[in-house]
Length: 228
Figure 1 (cartoon, helix red, strand yellow):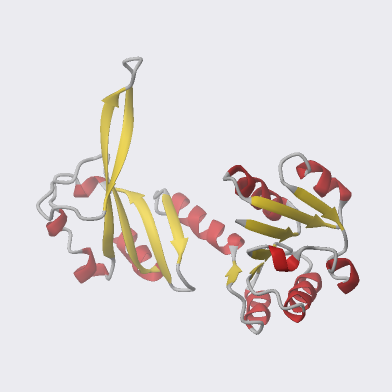
Figure 2: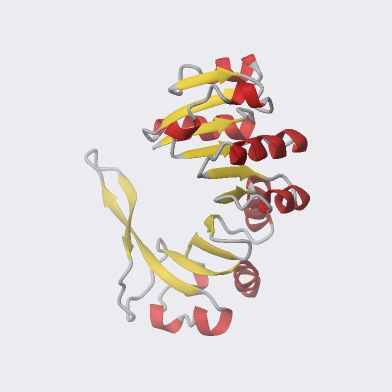
């Protein structure tokens, strides 16, 4: 896919580099020469322009990419103006970063494809790690619902999947089981290998290296971990 990322600071820069590493064509845009120079050898093309200027924005191939991502966060006015200009130019698919609830509320008025809240998601992940001692990979479906993958709690080892009753007790639906097993690699070193199973046996006995993938309300996940 082809992306234009406007704003190549800490967030936008990492986003551009990671998408490029995955094989996507990324066009980076920033008014800072320093930010552009840091990525010029890592992405397809880059532009040093002020994207809040409508004439400058016109040099970008806006109609030839799949998604335009506005990664500007700290400069509230610039973020909103760029989004407004993109909508005016008829860009069909726009993602935009919001740094707080006010920013998010304003962006919602533009009816965008996706509003990104990386700061909030990162803070939640840190809380889970520090307070609940749970290392989680999460995907936010909307403001309230998440899909989360986490290592099987020690107290569940030896139980059958059917014994957990997560949906009945906590409103969390198990959508996949990631089975972990130790194998020997070519050098004879023991390594951990995971295998995803979407259709798992209800009488399967859970093991210490397994992981669960669940769907539900964020508050229900918090309630589940606090109850352990």
